[in-house]
Length: 296
Image 1 (tube, rainbow, N blue to C red):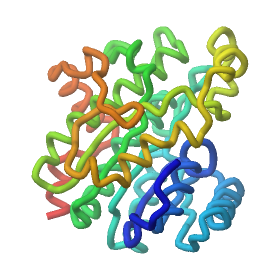
Image 2 (image 1 turned 90 degrees about the vertical axis):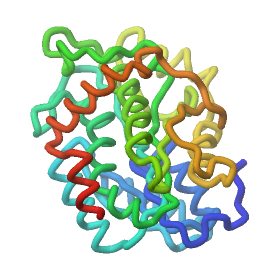
Image 3 (image 1 turned 180 degrees about the vertical axis):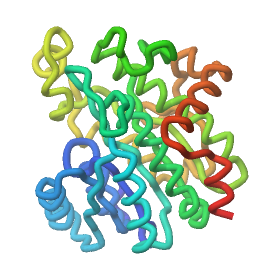
Image 4 (image 1 turned 90 degrees about the horizontal axis):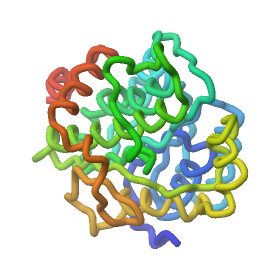
């Protein structure tokens, strides 16, 4: 169980995808610790229901719902501006929202939806919030990855699966990208007091993957659930990274079960990481240099 001793009093925490599953459980446990919570959801009704439940179960009224479609770059930018109008500080950003799509779809920005939400959503939102994170240091960024990254490969020749789409390849590629982003951003933020780590929550029995078909759908919906963790169990490493003094200053790591873990060999290839970073900047229209200048 997470610590509920009020250790997050005075801390502003943002959790994306906080209306269900891991995100909601992470938000709940941090609310129990006294954090001021910003719960990000795309769905207003589900978001309101989750916030009401978190307030009720935590006894913490400092829980707020904000709406954003994190697969839409326009929505991310508008959301970030709205957040900064309301809050001068952000001490913890948990990039938790994610998706696995059974079929290939594209966003209004023309980008394959899995890559758009799971990777570019993290990349753009974090960049839009870097100024307030740095102003709040010490601050922490936690990116939800997955052990699916071990089967991942950044396919620059077909990043969006136009030539050949596989839902699992798209998902595992996006989760590998989460780790690469975490490693690179951690290096760029050295000396700022802002740490960045990626986390594998374990296989968790939530509604995630419920629309999958074929073998992967069977694993998600039937076979795997017998061996999966609860959302409460799966959220523990994210909660640990968000709140524990033991990881103050620890950055550029991939965690599972609250311990650092080696990731896919490709994630340590600096040339691949550089290409991915440059592609991400191109696809989102942001640059780290601009974000640093804006926060100066």
